[in-house]
Image 1 (cartoon, rainbow over the protein chains, first blue to last red):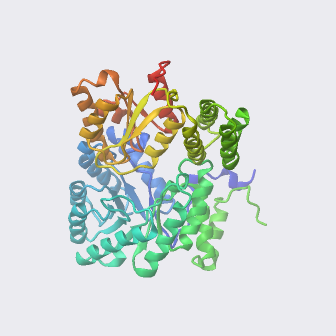
Image 2: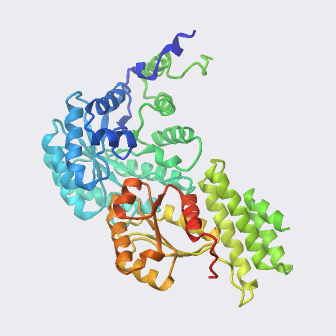
Length: 289
Length: 214
C-alpha cells in the first residue's frame, strides 16, 4: 500500500507560511451541526472544529453565532470563551450587530477581526468606534443601505466612502479588509469579472488595504463547485486577494492555494508545495511526473 | 412542429425555439397551443432541475425563452380567449431587504409554469402586500428575503393577512438563504422552499386541479 494512502486529512500538517491569510469558516451557527452544538453548549464539538482548522493553518477562526437575534449575544460570547481557552489563533467575529460585537469584545483576549461593516452609515459609526477603541481589524463589504452595486464603479464608490470613514476614525488602511462581494455566477455571468476588477481597482487605489472574500458564493447553483471555487481562488489571488473566507479543509482549495502562491513567486524554494506533496495533499492520483 | 418547439426549449436552443414559435404563430397555429408546448418544456426542465441534471442558469434561460415566446404570442391571442392559469401568486422581497436574484428566478419559474404572477419588487412594506392581496385575490403569497432582518417583516405579513381575514384563502410560502423550518415556524408561513422549483411545486399543490381563468 502506498504510504500516502494511510494518511488522513487530519494528519496533514502543512508548514504553512502562506502569504494568504485564511479565515476558517466552519464555526458557523447557521450550519445544522454547529447550530445544535451551540444550543446544547457542546464545547468539545466546537473545539474540534477549531482544532481541525488550526491544523490546516488558518490565520483566523470565524465565529458566527447563528441567526437567532435574541440569543446572538449569549451564543457569541460562549463561542468566543470556548475557543479562546484552547488556542491563541485570533478570532474573526462574524456579526453586523454593534451590541453583539461590544459584548464579545468585553470577554475577548486579543483583538479580533470584525466581520463585517458596510457603507450603512448608522452601523458603520458605532462599529468603527468599537474597532478603533479595541484595535481591531475590520472587514468592509462593498455594499450600503441601497444594496450591492451591480457595477465595478458603483462598488468602488461605496468602498471609497467606507475608507474615508475608517480614516476619519483613525483606523489605518492596513487594518481594513475590503470584501468586493462575490455573487453567484449562475445568475449573472459577469459576477466573476466584476469581483476581480473591483479587487484590482482597490489594490491600485489603496495599496495598503487588504482584500478578502467568501469564495464559495461564486459557484452556488452549479455542479462540481470545488472546481469553480478553486479556479476562482487562483484568479482572485492573481488579482490581489490576500485573504479568504473558506473551508480550510477543502482539498481543492488547499491545492489551488499552494499552486497559486508557488506560481506567483511567494513560496521560497517551493518549500510549501513540496512539503504538501510529501504530506499526501495531492493524493495518489497526481503522479510525480 | 409543436413537439420541435418543446424540444428546442428543453435542449436550450434559444434562437431555434424563438424562430419555431414565430413560424408557428405566423402560420396561424393557435397561440394557446404554442404556449402549452412551452409549458410542457418547462415541466421537463423543472423535473431535470429537481433531479440535479439541469441547473439554475438553464432555468433562467428557459424562463427567458418562455417570456420571449409569450410576448410574441400575445398579439395573436383573440380578445375573448385568455390563457388558462393555474392560479394567482403575489411575490415580494419583504421590507428591509433588497435582494432580488432568487425572487426573480421564482417569479420567472412560476410565470413559465402557468401562474398569473404579480411581482411587487423589493423592500415591499407589509401594508402594500396586504392591500395588493385584497385586490388581486391570490391563492399564494411568496415572500423572499436573504437577510435575517427579513424574518420579522415576514411574520408581520402573515399576521396582517390573518387580521384582515385573508389567510383562509391564501397560502404563504417563504424563501431565502437563511430560511429554514425554524424560521417558517417563527413567521407562521405555511411552508418554506429551498429553490425556485419548490415554489412551483407548492403553488401547484395548493392551487390543485382548480384552473382559474385569469
